[in-house]
Length: 107
Length: 484
Image (cartoon, rainbow over all chains, first blue to last red; front, top):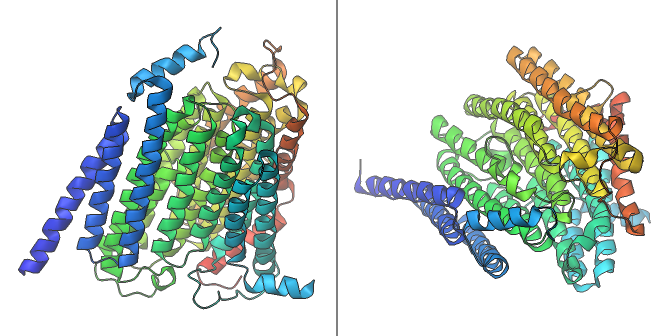
Protein backbone atom coordinates (compact mmCIF):
# COMPACT_ATOMS: atom_id res chain seq x y z
CA UNK A 1 0.00 0.00 0.00
CA UNK A 2 1.56 3.27 -1.16
CA UNK A 3 1.75 6.41 1.01
CA UNK A 4 -0.71 8.17 -1.27
CA UNK A 5 -3.41 5.56 -0.70
CA UNK A 6 -2.65 5.59 3.01
CA UNK A 7 -3.03 9.39 3.11
CA UNK A 8 -6.30 9.21 1.17
CA UNK A 9 -7.69 6.66 3.60
CA UNK A 10 -6.54 8.69 6.62
CA UNK A 11 -8.22 11.82 5.25
CA UNK A 12 -11.40 9.87 4.50
CA UNK A 13 -11.41 8.38 8.01
CA UNK A 14 -10.98 11.87 9.52
CA UNK A 15 -13.80 13.11 7.28
CA UNK A 16 -16.11 10.34 8.51
CA UNK A 17 -15.32 11.17 12.14
CA UNK A 18 -16.09 14.86 11.48
CA UNK A 19 -19.30 13.94 9.69
CA UNK A 20 -20.51 11.69 12.50
CA UNK A 21 -19.62 14.14 15.30
CA UNK A 22 -21.33 16.95 13.40
CA UNK A 23 -24.38 14.80 12.66
CA UNK A 24 -24.87 13.99 16.36
CA UNK A 25 -24.64 17.70 17.29
CA UNK A 26 -26.92 18.81 14.41
CA UNK A 27 -29.52 16.18 15.26
CA UNK A 28 -29.57 16.09 19.04
CA UNK A 29 -28.32 19.41 20.39
CA UNK A 30 -30.82 21.66 22.17
CA UNK A 31 -28.78 24.79 21.56
CA UNK A 32 -29.34 26.50 18.19
CA UNK A 33 -25.72 27.60 17.80
CA UNK A 34 -24.43 24.10 18.57
CA UNK A 35 -26.90 22.71 16.05
CA UNK A 36 -25.54 25.06 13.39
CA UNK A 37 -21.98 24.16 14.32
CA UNK A 38 -22.97 20.51 13.94
CA UNK A 39 -24.34 21.15 10.45
CA UNK A 40 -21.14 22.98 9.49
CA UNK A 41 -18.98 20.18 10.89
CA UNK A 42 -20.90 17.36 9.20
CA UNK A 43 -20.91 19.15 5.84
CA UNK A 44 -17.20 19.93 6.23
CA UNK A 45 -16.61 16.23 6.82
CA UNK A 46 -18.66 15.38 3.73
CA UNK A 47 -16.75 17.86 1.56
CA UNK A 48 -13.42 16.59 2.90
CA UNK A 49 -14.54 13.04 2.12
CA UNK A 50 -15.57 14.06 -1.40
CA UNK A 51 -12.15 15.65 -1.92
CA UNK A 52 -10.35 12.54 -0.64
CA UNK A 53 -12.40 10.31 -2.94
CA UNK A 54 -11.60 12.45 -5.98
CA UNK A 55 -15.11 13.77 -6.68
CA UNK A 56 -15.53 16.33 -9.49
CA UNK A 57 -14.96 20.01 -8.63
CA UNK A 58 -18.53 20.93 -9.58
CA UNK A 59 -19.84 18.75 -6.76
CA UNK A 60 -17.41 20.26 -4.23
CA UNK A 61 -18.48 23.78 -5.20
CA UNK A 62 -22.17 22.81 -5.02
CA UNK A 63 -21.60 21.32 -1.56
CA UNK A 64 -19.80 24.46 -0.35
CA UNK A 65 -22.68 26.63 -1.62
CA UNK A 66 -25.18 24.37 0.16
CA UNK A 67 -23.32 24.77 3.49
CA UNK A 68 -23.26 28.53 3.05
CA UNK A 69 -27.03 28.73 2.46
CA UNK A 70 -27.80 26.29 5.31
CA UNK A 71 -25.76 28.39 7.73
CA UNK A 72 -27.26 31.66 6.47
CA UNK A 73 -30.82 30.37 7.00
CA UNK A 74 -29.81 28.83 10.33
CA UNK A 75 -28.29 32.13 11.51
CA UNK A 76 -31.47 34.01 10.51
CA UNK A 77 -33.65 31.53 12.41
CA UNK A 78 -31.37 31.72 15.46
CA UNK A 79 -31.54 35.53 15.51
CA UNK A 80 -35.34 35.37 15.31
CA UNK A 81 -35.42 32.81 18.12
CA UNK A 82 -33.36 35.16 20.31
CA UNK A 83 -35.57 38.14 19.38
CA UNK A 84 -38.90 36.37 19.90
CA UNK A 85 -38.12 34.15 22.90
CA UNK A 86 -35.02 35.72 24.42
CA UNK A 87 -33.48 32.23 24.30
CA UNK A 88 -31.90 29.80 21.85
CA UNK A 89 -32.24 26.64 23.95
CA UNK A 90 -35.00 24.27 22.75
CA UNK A 91 -36.39 23.45 26.24
CA UNK A 92 -36.88 27.17 26.99
CA UNK A 93 -38.59 27.91 23.66
CA UNK A 94 -40.76 24.79 23.97
CA UNK A 95 -41.79 25.91 27.46
CA UNK A 96 -42.75 29.35 26.10
CA UNK A 97 -44.81 27.68 23.34
CA UNK A 98 -46.62 25.52 25.91
CA UNK A 99 -47.48 28.65 27.90
CA UNK A 100 -48.82 30.29 24.72
CA UNK A 101 -51.03 27.26 24.09
CA UNK A 102 -52.61 27.39 27.55
CA UNK A 103 -56.30 28.44 27.50
CA UNK A 104 -56.83 32.15 27.85
CA UNK A 105 -53.41 33.09 26.46
CA UNK A 106 -53.02 34.73 23.07
CA UNK A 107 -50.87 32.66 20.69
CA UNK B 1 -50.94 27.83 -31.78
CA UNK B 2 -49.57 24.58 -33.21
CA UNK B 3 -46.14 26.16 -33.63
CA UNK B 4 -46.17 27.31 -30.00
CA UNK B 5 -47.19 23.83 -28.89
CA UNK B 6 -44.40 22.26 -30.95
CA UNK B 7 -41.86 24.70 -29.47
CA UNK B 8 -43.14 23.87 -25.98
CA UNK B 9 -42.79 20.15 -26.66
CA UNK B 10 -39.24 20.59 -28.00
CA UNK B 11 -38.19 22.11 -24.67
CA UNK B 12 -40.58 20.12 -22.49
CA UNK B 13 -37.87 19.11 -20.03
CA UNK B 14 -36.56 22.62 -19.38
CA UNK B 15 -39.78 24.61 -19.64
CA UNK B 16 -41.35 23.70 -16.25
CA UNK B 17 -38.13 24.64 -14.49
CA UNK B 18 -37.99 28.01 -16.25
CA UNK B 19 -41.68 28.67 -15.50
CA UNK B 20 -41.18 27.88 -11.79
CA UNK B 21 -38.07 30.05 -11.47
CA UNK B 22 -39.40 33.02 -13.44
CA UNK B 23 -42.70 32.69 -11.57
CA UNK B 24 -40.84 32.80 -8.24
CA UNK B 25 -38.94 35.94 -9.28
CA UNK B 26 -42.11 37.68 -10.47
CA UNK B 27 -44.06 36.64 -7.37
CA UNK B 28 -41.41 38.32 -5.22
CA UNK B 29 -41.98 41.61 -7.08
CA UNK B 30 -45.79 41.61 -7.02
CA UNK B 31 -48.19 42.99 -4.41
CA UNK B 32 -49.23 40.36 -1.83
CA UNK B 33 -52.52 39.03 -3.23
CA UNK B 34 -51.30 39.27 -6.84
CA UNK B 35 -48.22 37.21 -5.93
CA UNK B 36 -50.57 34.41 -4.81
CA UNK B 37 -52.45 34.48 -8.12
CA UNK B 38 -49.26 34.59 -10.15
CA UNK B 39 -47.64 31.73 -8.26
CA UNK B 40 -50.77 29.59 -8.68
CA UNK B 41 -50.84 30.28 -12.43
CA UNK B 42 -47.12 29.43 -12.73
CA UNK B 43 -47.66 26.10 -10.96
CA UNK B 44 -50.70 25.35 -13.16
CA UNK B 45 -48.58 26.07 -16.26
CA UNK B 46 -45.91 23.67 -14.97
CA UNK B 47 -48.61 21.03 -14.44
CA UNK B 48 -49.93 21.54 -17.98
CA UNK B 49 -46.50 21.32 -19.64
CA UNK B 50 -45.43 18.22 -17.68
CA UNK B 51 -48.81 16.51 -18.09
CA UNK B 52 -48.71 17.03 -21.88
CA UNK B 53 -45.39 15.18 -22.08
CA UNK B 54 -46.53 12.43 -19.73
CA UNK B 55 -49.74 11.74 -21.64
CA UNK B 56 -47.89 11.63 -24.95
CA UNK B 57 -45.12 9.30 -23.80
CA UNK B 58 -46.69 7.12 -21.12
CA UNK B 59 -50.27 6.82 -22.37
CA UNK B 60 -50.15 7.51 -26.12
CA UNK B 61 -46.83 5.60 -26.35
CA UNK B 62 -45.01 8.34 -28.30
CA UNK B 63 -41.23 7.79 -28.40
CA UNK B 64 -39.20 9.28 -25.53
CA UNK B 65 -37.50 12.43 -26.82
CA UNK B 66 -33.93 13.36 -26.03
CA UNK B 67 -33.18 16.58 -24.19
CA UNK B 68 -31.47 19.33 -26.19
CA UNK B 69 -27.67 19.06 -26.17
CA UNK B 70 -25.96 21.03 -23.43
CA UNK B 71 -28.95 20.90 -21.06
CA UNK B 72 -28.05 18.62 -18.12
CA UNK B 73 -31.48 17.01 -17.88
CA UNK B 74 -32.58 13.43 -18.47
CA UNK B 75 -36.13 12.26 -19.18
CA UNK B 76 -37.05 8.86 -17.73
CA UNK B 77 -40.20 6.94 -16.85
CA UNK B 78 -40.39 7.84 -13.18
CA UNK B 79 -39.56 11.50 -13.78
CA UNK B 80 -42.23 11.67 -16.47
CA UNK B 81 -44.86 10.15 -14.17
CA UNK B 82 -43.96 12.05 -11.01
CA UNK B 83 -43.39 15.54 -12.50
CA UNK B 84 -47.04 16.32 -13.38
CA UNK B 85 -48.12 14.81 -10.07
CA UNK B 86 -45.73 17.15 -8.23
CA UNK B 87 -46.76 20.18 -10.27
CA UNK B 88 -50.48 19.44 -9.81
CA UNK B 89 -50.05 18.97 -6.05
CA UNK B 90 -48.10 22.25 -5.87
CA UNK B 91 -50.74 24.10 -7.90
CA UNK B 92 -53.55 22.84 -5.65
CA UNK B 93 -51.58 23.61 -2.48
CA UNK B 94 -50.72 27.08 -3.77
CA UNK B 95 -54.34 27.79 -4.67
CA UNK B 96 -55.48 26.55 -1.25
CA UNK B 97 -52.88 28.61 0.58
CA UNK B 98 -54.85 31.69 -0.52
CA UNK B 99 -57.33 30.83 2.23
CA UNK B 100 -54.77 30.68 5.01
CA UNK B 101 -52.32 33.41 3.95
CA UNK B 102 -53.94 35.75 6.45
CA UNK B 103 -52.25 33.63 9.15
CA UNK B 104 -48.94 35.26 8.26
CA UNK B 105 -47.76 38.85 7.93
CA UNK B 106 -49.04 40.42 4.73
CA UNK B 107 -45.63 41.78 3.71
CA UNK B 108 -44.15 38.25 3.67
CA UNK B 109 -46.79 36.79 1.29
CA UNK B 110 -44.75 37.41 -1.90
CA UNK B 111 -41.71 35.77 -0.30
CA UNK B 112 -43.79 32.78 0.83
CA UNK B 113 -45.21 32.32 -2.68
CA UNK B 114 -41.72 32.57 -4.21
CA UNK B 115 -40.42 29.96 -1.76
CA UNK B 116 -43.20 27.52 -2.69
CA UNK B 117 -42.26 27.89 -6.37
CA UNK B 118 -38.59 27.38 -5.44
CA UNK B 119 -39.65 24.10 -3.81
CA UNK B 120 -41.47 23.09 -6.95
CA UNK B 121 -38.43 24.05 -9.03
CA UNK B 122 -36.18 21.97 -6.79
CA UNK B 123 -38.26 18.81 -6.81
CA UNK B 124 -38.95 19.03 -10.56
CA UNK B 125 -35.22 19.59 -11.10
CA UNK B 126 -34.33 16.53 -9.00
CA UNK B 127 -36.80 14.48 -11.07
CA UNK B 128 -35.15 15.59 -14.29
CA UNK B 129 -31.45 16.02 -13.39
CA UNK B 130 -29.00 14.09 -15.54
CA UNK B 131 -26.37 13.46 -12.88
CA UNK B 132 -26.04 13.11 -9.11
CA UNK B 133 -24.53 16.60 -8.70
CA UNK B 134 -27.65 18.06 -10.32
CA UNK B 135 -29.87 15.92 -8.10
CA UNK B 136 -28.02 17.20 -5.00
CA UNK B 137 -28.34 20.87 -5.98
CA UNK B 138 -32.01 20.48 -6.83
CA UNK B 139 -32.84 18.67 -3.57
CA UNK B 140 -31.01 21.33 -1.54
CA UNK B 141 -32.93 24.10 -3.33
CA UNK B 142 -36.26 22.46 -2.52
CA UNK B 143 -35.37 21.57 1.06
CA UNK B 144 -33.90 24.93 2.04
CA UNK B 145 -36.92 26.67 0.50
CA UNK B 146 -39.14 24.46 2.72
CA UNK B 147 -37.16 25.39 5.83
CA UNK B 148 -37.26 29.10 4.97
CA UNK B 149 -41.01 28.92 4.27
CA UNK B 150 -41.65 27.32 7.65
CA UNK B 151 -39.43 29.82 9.46
CA UNK B 152 -40.99 32.84 7.76
CA UNK B 153 -44.60 31.95 7.66
CA UNK B 154 -45.92 30.28 10.76
CA UNK B 155 -45.10 32.67 13.58
CA UNK B 156 -42.63 32.05 16.37
CA UNK B 157 -43.90 28.57 17.20
CA UNK B 158 -42.50 27.31 13.89
CA UNK B 159 -38.95 28.59 14.50
CA UNK B 160 -37.94 25.60 16.62
CA UNK B 161 -39.41 23.24 14.01
CA UNK B 162 -37.51 25.05 11.24
CA UNK B 163 -34.25 24.64 13.14
CA UNK B 164 -34.93 20.93 13.69
CA UNK B 165 -35.68 20.58 9.98
CA UNK B 166 -32.47 22.40 9.14
CA UNK B 167 -30.43 20.12 11.42
CA UNK B 168 -31.98 16.92 10.07
CA UNK B 169 -31.63 18.19 6.50
CA UNK B 170 -27.96 19.08 7.11
CA UNK B 171 -27.30 15.52 8.26
CA UNK B 172 -29.21 14.22 5.22
CA UNK B 173 -27.16 16.40 2.87
CA UNK B 174 -23.88 15.25 4.45
CA UNK B 175 -24.91 11.59 4.14
CA UNK B 176 -25.97 12.14 0.52
CA UNK B 177 -22.66 13.80 -0.36
CA UNK B 178 -20.67 11.10 1.40
CA UNK B 179 -22.68 8.48 -0.52
CA UNK B 180 -22.09 10.28 -3.83
CA UNK B 181 -18.33 10.36 -3.13
CA UNK B 182 -18.15 6.64 -2.35
CA UNK B 183 -20.39 5.82 -5.30
CA UNK B 184 -18.29 7.91 -7.69
CA UNK B 185 -15.08 6.26 -6.47
CA UNK B 186 -16.53 2.79 -7.19
CA UNK B 187 -18.56 3.44 -10.34
CA UNK B 188 -16.46 6.20 -11.94
CA UNK B 189 -19.40 8.35 -13.07
CA UNK B 190 -22.08 10.63 -11.69
CA UNK B 191 -24.26 10.24 -14.80
CA UNK B 192 -27.47 8.41 -13.90
CA UNK B 193 -27.92 6.83 -17.32
CA UNK B 194 -24.38 5.37 -17.23
CA UNK B 195 -24.84 3.46 -13.95
CA UNK B 196 -26.43 0.36 -15.51
CA UNK B 197 -23.53 -0.18 -17.91
CA UNK B 198 -20.64 1.16 -15.80
CA UNK B 199 -17.75 -1.07 -14.80
CA UNK B 200 -18.05 -1.21 -11.00
CA UNK B 201 -14.74 -1.75 -9.20
CA UNK B 202 -16.17 -2.54 -5.78
CA UNK B 203 -19.79 -3.64 -5.63
CA UNK B 204 -19.95 -3.40 -1.82
CA UNK B 205 -18.64 0.17 -1.77
CA UNK B 206 -20.98 1.20 -4.59
CA UNK B 207 -23.95 -0.33 -2.75
CA UNK B 208 -22.89 1.49 0.45
CA UNK B 209 -22.68 4.77 -1.47
CA UNK B 210 -26.08 4.23 -3.05
CA UNK B 211 -27.55 3.30 0.34
CA UNK B 212 -26.18 6.50 1.92
CA UNK B 213 -27.60 8.61 -0.90
CA UNK B 214 -31.05 7.06 -0.49
CA UNK B 215 -30.80 7.41 3.30
CA UNK B 216 -30.01 11.12 2.91
CA UNK B 217 -33.14 11.70 0.81
CA UNK B 218 -35.27 9.40 3.01
CA UNK B 219 -34.42 11.66 5.93
CA UNK B 220 -35.94 14.59 4.06
CA UNK B 221 -38.97 12.55 2.98
CA UNK B 222 -39.87 11.87 6.61
CA UNK B 223 -39.38 8.12 6.37
CA UNK B 224 -39.56 6.58 9.87
CA UNK B 225 -37.48 6.32 12.03
CA UNK B 226 -35.68 9.30 10.45
CA UNK B 227 -38.65 11.66 10.80
CA UNK B 228 -37.80 13.25 14.13
CA UNK B 229 -38.11 16.74 12.59
CA UNK B 230 -41.77 16.22 11.66
CA UNK B 231 -43.14 16.70 15.16
CA UNK B 232 -41.72 20.23 15.30
CA UNK B 233 -42.56 21.12 11.71
CA UNK B 234 -46.25 20.23 11.96
CA UNK B 235 -47.17 22.17 15.07
CA UNK B 236 -49.70 24.51 13.45
CA UNK B 237 -53.00 23.19 12.03
CA UNK B 238 -53.27 24.64 8.57
CA UNK B 239 -50.77 27.40 7.98
CA UNK B 240 -49.36 27.69 4.47
CA UNK B 241 -46.09 26.05 5.49
CA UNK B 242 -47.73 22.89 6.89
CA UNK B 243 -50.01 22.74 3.84
CA UNK B 244 -47.11 22.91 1.38
CA UNK B 245 -44.59 20.89 3.37
CA UNK B 246 -47.05 18.05 4.03
CA UNK B 247 -47.97 17.77 0.37
CA UNK B 248 -45.28 19.13 -1.98
CA UNK B 249 -42.27 18.47 0.28
CA UNK B 250 -43.02 14.87 1.22
CA UNK B 251 -44.26 13.78 -2.22
CA UNK B 252 -41.28 15.42 -3.93
CA UNK B 253 -38.71 13.71 -1.73
CA UNK B 254 -40.40 10.32 -2.10
CA UNK B 255 -40.57 10.71 -5.88
CA UNK B 256 -36.83 11.44 -5.95
CA UNK B 257 -36.15 8.29 -3.87
CA UNK B 258 -38.16 6.22 -6.36
CA UNK B 259 -36.23 7.77 -9.27
CA UNK B 260 -32.79 7.24 -7.72
CA UNK B 261 -33.72 3.69 -6.77
CA UNK B 262 -34.77 3.15 -10.37
CA UNK B 263 -31.13 3.57 -11.36
CA UNK B 264 -29.31 1.91 -8.46
CA UNK B 265 -31.68 -0.84 -7.27
CA UNK B 266 -31.95 -2.24 -10.78
CA UNK B 267 -28.19 -2.41 -11.37
CA UNK B 268 -27.23 -6.10 -11.61
CA UNK B 269 -24.05 -5.56 -9.55
CA UNK B 270 -25.31 -3.51 -6.61
CA UNK B 271 -29.08 -3.97 -6.80
CA UNK B 272 -29.31 -6.70 -4.19
CA UNK B 273 -27.60 -4.73 -1.41
CA UNK B 274 -29.65 -1.62 -2.14
CA UNK B 275 -32.87 -3.66 -2.19
CA UNK B 276 -32.17 -5.13 1.24
CA UNK B 277 -31.48 -1.67 2.69
CA UNK B 278 -34.68 -0.26 1.16
CA UNK B 279 -36.76 -3.21 2.35
CA UNK B 280 -35.50 -2.87 5.94
CA UNK B 281 -36.11 0.88 5.98
CA UNK B 282 -39.52 0.44 4.34
CA UNK B 283 -40.65 -2.23 6.81
CA UNK B 284 -39.50 -0.11 9.76
CA UNK B 285 -41.29 2.95 8.38
CA UNK B 286 -44.57 1.05 7.93
CA UNK B 287 -44.51 -0.19 11.54
CA UNK B 288 -43.21 2.95 13.29
CA UNK B 289 -45.30 5.39 11.21
CA UNK B 290 -48.47 3.36 11.79
CA UNK B 291 -47.93 3.12 15.55
CA UNK B 292 -47.21 6.85 15.83
CA UNK B 293 -50.28 7.73 13.75
CA UNK B 294 -52.46 5.61 16.07
CA UNK B 295 -51.14 7.58 19.07
CA UNK B 296 -51.26 11.07 17.48
CA UNK B 297 -53.55 13.76 18.96
CA UNK B 298 -52.90 16.44 16.32
CA UNK B 299 -54.41 16.05 12.83
CA UNK B 300 -51.43 17.39 10.85
CA UNK B 301 -49.03 15.19 12.83
CA UNK B 302 -51.35 12.22 12.35
CA UNK B 303 -51.32 12.90 8.61
CA UNK B 304 -47.52 13.20 8.64
CA UNK B 305 -47.04 9.92 10.56
CA UNK B 306 -49.59 8.12 8.36
CA UNK B 307 -47.61 9.48 5.42
CA UNK B 308 -44.46 7.93 6.89
CA UNK B 309 -46.26 4.56 7.00
CA UNK B 310 -47.32 4.99 3.36
CA UNK B 311 -43.76 6.02 2.48
CA UNK B 312 -42.61 2.71 3.95
CA UNK B 313 -44.94 0.92 1.53
CA UNK B 314 -43.42 2.88 -1.35
CA UNK B 315 -39.89 1.86 -0.28
CA UNK B 316 -41.01 -1.79 -0.12
CA UNK B 317 -42.32 -1.53 -3.70
CA UNK B 318 -39.10 0.07 -4.89
CA UNK B 319 -36.99 -2.56 -3.10
CA UNK B 320 -38.48 -5.19 -5.41
CA UNK B 321 -36.49 -3.59 -8.24
CA UNK B 322 -38.92 -4.86 -10.90
CA UNK B 323 -41.12 -2.92 -13.36
CA UNK B 324 -44.17 -4.13 -11.40
CA UNK B 325 -42.58 -2.86 -8.18
CA UNK B 326 -41.89 0.60 -9.63
CA UNK B 327 -45.40 0.78 -11.09
CA UNK B 328 -46.83 -0.12 -7.65
CA UNK B 329 -44.62 2.56 -6.03
CA UNK B 330 -45.96 5.19 -8.43
CA UNK B 331 -49.59 4.21 -7.75
CA UNK B 332 -48.89 4.39 -4.00
CA UNK B 333 -47.23 7.77 -4.47
CA UNK B 334 -50.35 9.06 -6.22
CA UNK B 335 -52.54 7.65 -3.45
CA UNK B 336 -50.37 9.30 -0.80
CA UNK B 337 -50.53 12.63 -2.65
CA UNK B 338 -54.34 12.48 -2.78
CA UNK B 339 -54.61 11.54 0.92
CA UNK B 340 -52.15 14.28 1.93
CA UNK B 341 -54.11 16.90 -0.03
CA UNK B 342 -57.33 15.72 1.62
CA UNK B 343 -56.01 15.67 5.19
CA UNK B 344 -53.86 18.81 5.13
CA UNK B 345 -56.52 20.69 3.13
CA UNK B 346 -59.21 19.54 5.53
CA UNK B 347 -57.10 20.57 8.52
CA UNK B 348 -56.62 24.04 7.00
CA UNK B 349 -60.32 24.41 6.11
CA UNK B 350 -61.50 23.46 9.58
CA UNK B 351 -58.63 25.09 11.49
CA UNK B 352 -58.18 21.67 13.06
CA UNK B 353 -55.26 21.28 15.44
CA UNK B 354 -56.12 18.71 18.08
CA UNK B 355 -58.48 15.89 17.15
CA UNK B 356 -61.17 17.41 19.43
CA UNK B 357 -61.58 20.17 16.84
CA UNK B 358 -62.91 17.54 14.43
CA UNK B 359 -66.00 16.87 16.55
CA UNK B 360 -69.02 17.52 14.37
CA UNK B 361 -66.93 19.14 11.60
CA UNK B 362 -68.65 16.99 8.98
CA UNK B 363 -71.86 18.96 9.57
CA UNK B 364 -70.29 22.41 10.03
CA UNK B 365 -67.93 22.18 7.02
CA UNK B 366 -69.28 19.41 4.73
CA UNK B 367 -66.59 19.65 2.02
CA UNK B 368 -63.71 19.67 4.53
CA UNK B 369 -65.36 16.78 6.38
CA UNK B 370 -65.80 14.79 3.17
CA UNK B 371 -62.16 15.41 2.22
CA UNK B 372 -60.83 14.27 5.60
CA UNK B 373 -63.10 11.22 5.49
CA UNK B 374 -61.98 10.27 1.98
CA UNK B 375 -58.32 10.74 3.01
CA UNK B 376 -58.93 8.52 6.02
CA UNK B 377 -60.58 5.70 4.08
CA UNK B 378 -57.84 5.83 1.47
CA UNK B 379 -55.19 5.53 4.20
CA UNK B 380 -57.11 2.51 5.54
CA UNK B 381 -56.83 0.95 2.10
CA UNK B 382 -60.60 0.57 1.76
CA UNK B 383 -61.70 -1.07 -1.55
CA UNK B 384 -62.54 1.22 -4.50
CA UNK B 385 -60.13 3.90 -3.26
CA UNK B 386 -56.74 4.83 -4.64
CA UNK B 387 -55.16 3.71 -1.34
CA UNK B 388 -56.51 0.19 -1.86
CA UNK B 389 -55.20 0.13 -5.41
CA UNK B 390 -51.69 1.08 -4.27
CA UNK B 391 -51.61 -1.62 -1.61
CA UNK B 392 -53.10 -4.22 -3.93
CA UNK B 393 -50.38 -3.53 -6.49
CA UNK B 394 -47.74 -3.91 -3.76
CA UNK B 395 -49.22 -7.25 -2.68
CA UNK B 396 -49.30 -8.41 -6.32
CA UNK B 397 -45.71 -7.35 -7.01
CA UNK B 398 -44.46 -8.65 -3.63
CA UNK B 399 -46.13 -12.06 -3.90
CA UNK B 400 -44.91 -12.32 -7.48
CA UNK B 401 -41.35 -11.92 -6.21
CA UNK B 402 -41.89 -14.29 -3.27
CA UNK B 403 -41.92 -11.49 -0.70
CA UNK B 404 -44.88 -12.75 1.35
CA UNK B 405 -43.85 -10.69 4.33
CA UNK B 406 -44.49 -7.53 2.28
CA UNK B 407 -48.15 -8.56 2.15
CA UNK B 408 -48.00 -8.84 5.95
CA UNK B 409 -46.65 -5.29 6.18
CA UNK B 410 -49.52 -4.06 3.98
CA UNK B 411 -52.09 -5.79 6.20
CA UNK B 412 -50.47 -4.25 9.29
CA UNK B 413 -50.58 -0.77 7.71
CA UNK B 414 -54.24 -1.25 6.78
CA UNK B 415 -55.20 -2.46 10.28
CA UNK B 416 -53.46 0.53 11.85
CA UNK B 417 -55.22 2.72 9.25
CA UNK B 418 -58.57 1.38 10.43
CA UNK B 419 -57.71 2.57 13.96
CA UNK B 420 -56.53 6.08 13.18
CA UNK B 421 -58.76 6.62 10.13
CA UNK B 422 -61.79 5.26 11.95
CA UNK B 423 -61.12 7.62 14.83
CA UNK B 424 -61.21 10.59 12.43
CA UNK B 425 -64.49 9.50 10.81
CA UNK B 426 -66.11 8.84 14.18
CA UNK B 427 -65.24 12.35 15.37
CA UNK B 428 -66.33 13.97 12.09
CA UNK B 429 -69.80 12.48 11.89
CA UNK B 430 -70.76 10.79 15.17
CA UNK B 431 -69.95 13.47 17.77
CA UNK B 432 -71.68 16.63 18.79
CA UNK B 433 -69.79 19.83 17.93
CA UNK B 434 -68.23 20.92 21.20
CA UNK B 435 -66.23 23.96 20.21
CA UNK B 436 -66.37 27.03 18.02
CA UNK B 437 -65.32 26.76 14.37
CA UNK B 438 -61.61 27.60 14.04
CA UNK B 439 -61.24 27.65 10.24
CA UNK B 440 -61.15 30.65 7.89
CA UNK B 441 -64.52 32.40 7.65
CA UNK B 442 -64.02 35.01 4.93
CA UNK B 443 -64.70 34.61 1.20
CA UNK B 444 -61.12 33.46 0.62
CA UNK B 445 -61.96 30.14 2.31
CA UNK B 446 -63.32 29.05 -1.09
CA UNK B 447 -59.71 28.97 -2.32
CA UNK B 448 -59.47 25.64 -0.47
CA UNK B 449 -62.36 24.13 -2.45
CA UNK B 450 -60.35 23.02 -5.53
CA UNK B 451 -57.83 21.18 -3.33
CA UNK B 452 -60.51 19.44 -1.30
CA UNK B 453 -62.63 18.54 -4.33
CA UNK B 454 -59.58 17.33 -6.31
CA UNK B 455 -58.45 15.11 -3.45
CA UNK B 456 -61.90 13.49 -3.19
CA UNK B 457 -62.04 12.94 -6.96
CA UNK B 458 -58.47 11.55 -7.00
CA UNK B 459 -59.23 9.08 -4.22
CA UNK B 460 -62.38 8.01 -6.04
CA UNK B 461 -60.14 7.35 -9.07
CA UNK B 462 -59.72 3.91 -7.51
CA UNK B 463 -63.12 2.98 -9.03
CA UNK B 464 -61.82 3.37 -12.58
CA UNK B 465 -58.04 3.31 -12.47
CA UNK B 466 -57.22 2.13 -16.02
CA UNK B 467 -55.53 5.36 -17.10
CA UNK B 468 -53.43 5.62 -13.95
CA UNK B 469 -52.38 1.97 -14.13
CA UNK B 470 -51.42 2.31 -17.81
CA UNK B 471 -49.25 5.34 -17.03
CA UNK B 472 -47.64 3.67 -14.00
CA UNK B 473 -46.95 0.42 -15.88
CA UNK B 474 -45.44 2.36 -18.81
CA UNK B 475 -43.27 4.39 -16.43
CA UNK B 476 -42.01 1.25 -14.67
CA UNK B 477 -41.26 -0.47 -17.97
CA UNK B 478 -39.58 2.62 -19.42
CA UNK B 479 -37.41 3.01 -16.34
CA UNK B 480 -36.05 -0.48 -16.72
CA UNK B 481 -35.39 -0.08 -20.43
CA UNK B 482 -38.54 -1.73 -21.73
CA UNK B 483 -40.99 -0.27 -24.18
CA UNK B 484 -43.81 1.82 -22.76
